[in-house]
Image (cartoon, rainbow over all chains, first blue to last red; front, top):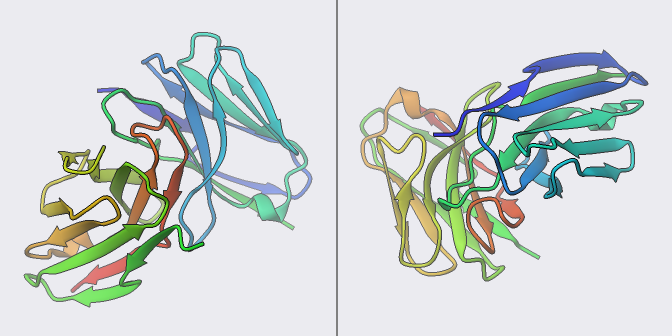
Length: 110
Length: 114
């Protein structure tokens, strides 16, 4: 059974600050997805990282896949209130299951 | 574009009652999933169906049953509801199983068991 940990669990920051959240595991993955869930909604896919060491940028969001493909990070530059939400990571699986980490709840205050 | 549709959106049950949560997708996806989400928590997988005709247990299957009725529909049944099953339930679908393609989620069903 893979162990997937996201940290921190909660983060409350002021608008304009930078932050990084992490997704770590003891297992190697062929790819990993990041989702964001806004209050009252279902999660929506932000990005999929596939190659070890890969860096993908989505406007102010930068996603990195670890060289060993066991971990990933999400960095947000100059956070805005619209970034508020629950950030979830989900690694690929050859069992058919889609398992999510516990998530990082981000609150960005104006 | 409807995507993934869940019904009902809200439900209150008494302990011991049964109910079925419905989920339908119109994207011709092979795989479908049921999750529960408790306050301040991520999503926990209850059951999934990697393809039409198959279902399998997820992380927290106890107290639930599922039916993959056809390629479009995947229902979740609570035979005898318990207060511990108070949660928000999400259905999702993807073209391929296991996080290899994008998963699309419904709006959720907010269930309270009293």
